[in-house]
Length: 524
Image (cartoon, rainbow, N blue to C red):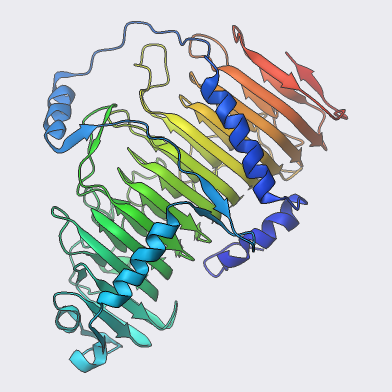
């Protein structure tokens, strides 16, 4: 399978079982993982080495203080519980609240209209900006968009609006050739005051990147230049939608503005209670699906692949399929997939923002991504950096990393199945890595626990096909060492190399093995 733009992500759950060879009792594994996570939270990790932090330049201090005018203190909330229904479908406990609000939305819609009745023409030529504006009005409406290509300079949705197409590839909404680079194809009406009860379903969103020509950078700033942006939205749904070649992101669930007030702060005006389901996207300049400073986000059965990376300098493109970014909390990702991105799933933050926390991943397929799973808080890695106040709490279950590779997106980045940097309380349970025995991984490790990570548990790890790689798991030592790491049940085949490589001065390491490892040995 190519996992290209035509991949059907609703098959991911079944495909995971075929790829991994594991038919997991997901409810049982979730309970087991939660127990491991609670042990992490109760464990007091080895302290980090803290040298005198390097002082920020005066200009950056001024910028942080300005952002604090629009920020609020960051806190790590209690992780949301997840449930499994009788069909084995996984969902967050708050989805019941969102389901009630869907009923509320449908009861408040007072009219259903067709864009054609307001002058809309899906001929791929006519400007439908005015038609959409008239059809949507002040909201409380379901707008039907039939098959065709509907050109617009942007659609703005007030509260209580439902925009419904005939399906991906049937209904296409496309940006006008004269739309500015910073245009959002679809967004909510009031990013400052906020909007609520918005639903977009059944369509392709073409950002029309061709209109820009061969520009060096395809985006402007902040949460602009994307196919769909929800900024300061409460109760939102996006289902069965395709994002095509956006300058920045296919789908951005965001705050009013991105905020860089420093670690320990997050933006005001974040989104909350948003469900993204069966989304596909490709050609994105930065990330496929991203979240910023938002809470209670559910992303399921979605697939992102083949970014352009053109929002970045060539060769330095941190373009991820799924990115849980600055200040996001309580994000659940279930049965998604990525292909040929820089990162498959990246949980992170910039140096001058709080990290994503309370992130749960249940089922993911990463194919030919450079770093299949990448958890990091940039700028809080070294002994001369300040210790992260916010990089806490990630659990991941039933992951697959298939042939991570070098990439032109980020030329100096080495392939990894998993990287954990700076985060505390990370549990990865049932992780399958499948390589290409002929591919030259240049003796790089497959899993790296590094840069002051603490309380990391790796459980039930299966590896095959990485004949020309380095250690399966490397726990980096030295001044910036990781510590307080537990590794249980590593199964390796097709290998003649180290399984576990422990760096200098790592003090707290626990290894437990129930099965004999053939053709490999621990190196401690």
